[in-house]
Length: 138
Image (cartoon, rainbow, N blue to C red; front, side, top):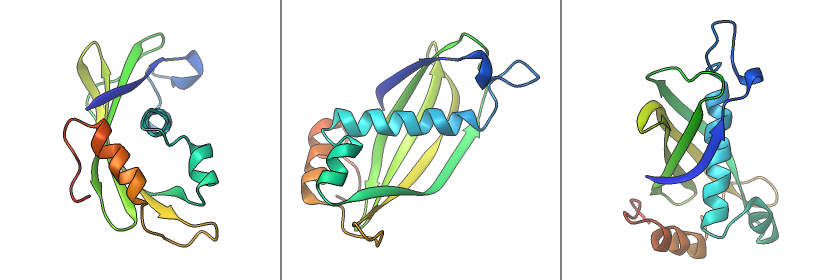
């Protein structure tokens, strides 16, 4: 996993039980994907300029332990697989090394019309160069 995003839990992200509302982990996951894409040289603006984008088609999260107000969280992510038109990210949210939530998110590459398109070779190459453990298949 590659740690790409750290955040401190804001009061508004907690619920009546005083813990992070479960839906906010999806936001943390999304912010981590955004940071990863920027780290490999493909911020969203770059995707759009290259005439392709990514849309979320599947999210999976398992919750292990709750985070609380003012906790500092480390969010880690890696590309697990790149297929013809999709990119699957594995995700972990940790506090002081302890996994609080983990899961995956699948994005489909789309063209300007919103139709699925092949994930560009340049993006595949950037991911392989960035990660210590390359995704399957590339």
